[in-house]
Image (tube, rainbow, N blue to C red; front, side):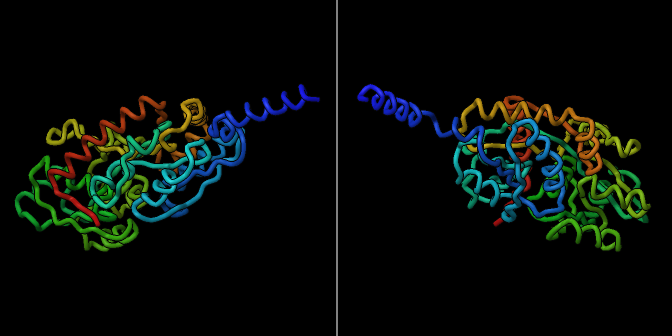
Length: 322
């Protein structure tokens, strides 16, 4: 009897010694946090990917929209949670850029998170009304240089990726645009279609329907290469004045810093496998994205490179948000 009780006690101690992360990695649902509202581009992509991760991880991956703070509400929720693989965060440029822009946001992606894999990329598009006299980005820039502070450029808000593109164009070319920040892309669309705005920066997926209807002229896209959906529109890198400038919109998955590397690796492998599925590629393409997976280390290196670009834009343009 004594020996049996001793064995039971030893077994109990052994279970107590198992790391919490190891216990959590194979049980219960996984929350996938999205910092923007349902129906938006980030939410769309996350909901395409979640079922694929569910298949490969053997655990239900459930999307939760934690909106506000330019994505920071969701990111903070990840950081406040447990480092056990029970929570994922679906983030992009805002993960890195918002803390640069808003000093009250005390988040450092390098210290507080572990990037586990990039999922997809898309580009942004510089557009003008269909009736605009400007046929190329060069012509738009030349007009803004000839008459400083007379040509408007609309974006969904201060500090957004679209705003950064506008500032990047201004800094590289020396043109002085009038920045018109809105509270969302829908208002930008309304005003450029009404001819109130001279130009605007959109996600390519947002601009594409208006382009197809003949309501907008897209002058350039911000990716390294031309968008497959816009083969006749140049990438900014093709334009001599903007050679080497590319600012794609990217998305990927993060876990809390301190998560067991074995758990993070499982997520990374699941993302890579999911992005290879033809139906996933098609559904992402329908939403304006290109499946573009990157494993953990490569993804972190990519973010580092993008952060250098963001930091230069922020410093040169002195953008701040409260």
